Image (cartoon, rainbow over all chains, first blue to last red; front, side, top):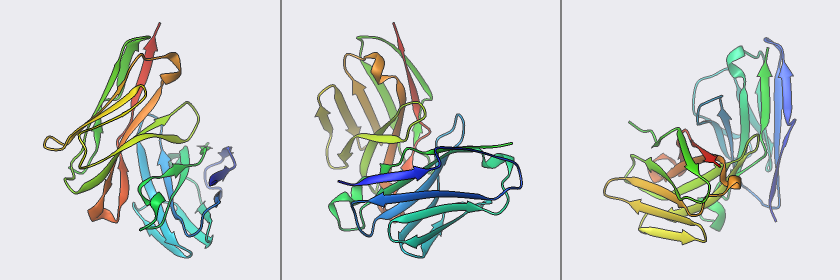
Amino acid sequence: SQTIHQWPATLVQPVGSPLSLECTVEGTSNPNLYWYRQAAGRGLQLLFYSVGIGQISSEVPQNLSASRPQDRQFILSSKKLLLSDSGFYLCAWSGASGTSAHNEQFFGPGTRLTVL
Amino acid sequence: GEDVEQSLFLSVREGDSSVINCTYTDSSSTYLYWYKQEPGAGLQLLTYIFSNMDMKQDQRLTVLLNKKDKHLSLRIADTQTGDSAIYFCAEMRMNRDDKIIFGKGTRLHILP
């Protein structure tokens, strides 16, 4: 069965510090991967998605970047955090186009980031 | 606009039915989803409906789709305290690389 992991679960960082959040998926190959941010009282905002290694699409201009160094690893980074980067970051995967799992997204447990 | 719209809050007495409504904008949407998020956790897919269906029932959950009005609803029968969560409506848009677009979520509060 497939599982998706995120770490750390919680993180408190000062403004201006770097960030690295990691997401890994097990039990599937060539997944589509997604990073979302859920700010307090707001819905989900899609930040990045990836259909393959090294292929990253950015949805909104921002202070963050994403990388996919391996098929089942997705990393969210920042060189200098802003206060507005605080939120709940969710990683998700779906099957590649044409697979049975393409039409669903499966979410990780999330990382709660607080920037002070 | 391009938003998926849903009300932010809903309060329901335990044992009553909950109906959470959603409107979407893209007529090319293929799948429509309801996700549940419990406090501090990720999103869990509750159910989804293909756009050529009108209704889907799964135990206490009933999804109704009015494609003409682009209206989706989730009915939870016999609402229980464990149903307290945020419920997200979402649509998959074929003209946006099959990305899933989420609403802002409806927080369901259960009254004793």
